[in-house]
Length: 263
Image (cartoon, rainbow, N blue to C red; front, top):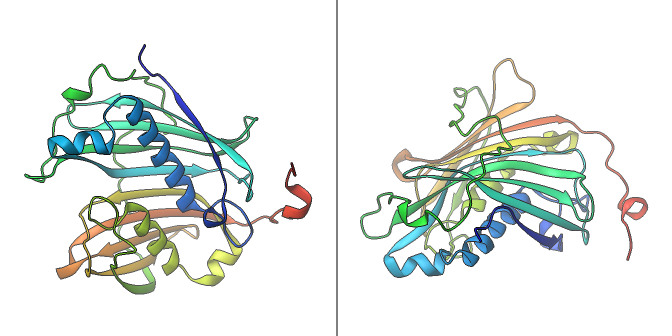
């Protein structure tokens, strides 16, 4: 029987939380990716399966809508995902994250995966994935069409980061979630204190390797008080990642001592 929707439960740990004890944007991406990896393990096409054929999984696009109700530290969340579209070169995964035992939405979104040939560094056809899982045309985003980002606006901040061994994943590149951290780190502190993230879209464009120096710039979009463009450039100015984040004025964050369901 083909896997249709896959579901896994996660516990929010200390490394997944903000200073307010709520789930970080990076953790939302991590839960979605890890759940996908677990599903592909059941389908015998996990990273450690395809590497034997000189193939690797790479994520190239991601978008997530973040709900107003985030999970607190030590709470559990259910991650549910499914393959919503399979083309000759791309696989689209849709996901939703809810507080465990309820339908209270934490986040929802979609991401695009590709198979890369490790020798030629070219994308490979997805024909070998056919028949390993069901394809359900149920999308958590409006469409899978690549979102066009606005042009650079008013420069707000810049920072540099040298890739170290702490940033590199099992593929030998800077891990994709590292770019999210770098972009959010560049945002001014006063903005982070007064606003809450509602949407994030990421385009990963090129690999980054050990000792590469990355330059991250954050721009405020003209005629928008809630949208920011983050560009990350590598050596020789090569664009390696772009992110678009949308924010809303923050409401009062619940007190965890009053809100957390203690077991």
